[in-house]
Amino acid sequence: MSLDYLLKTEPSEYSFADLQRDVATEWDGVSNPAALKNLREMKPGAKLVIYETGERKSAMGTASVVSVDISNPKKPVVKIKAGKALATPVSLAEIKADKLFADSPLVRQGRLSVVPLSEAQYKSLVGS
Image (cartoon, rainbow, N blue to C red; front, side, top):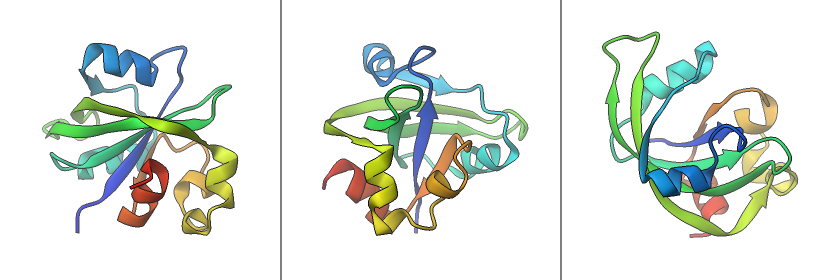
């Protein structure tokens, strides 16, 4: 069973719109040990949800993992490519109200920037 993931970003630094403009990017700037572990565990083809922090606090769109290089485990290099914007962004309040996320690190560890998602959680966020 492959996991999907939610990646958090501060929109003033790099927004989902920036990813769409760039088409692909390396996901970096992660320093939390748990988040780094999640990056190292990613596999090419994994589905991603891009979540913007700050004022928005909402899941904004999708992306996918292109490649993962863990030759340096302290700085894994994960390349991602943009998917589609969500028809309607999903707010943190909506996520917290969804029972699927009751035990999710997204709700329980608010500072974690790379969060694993079950298939059901992914589908709940992207609406498919």
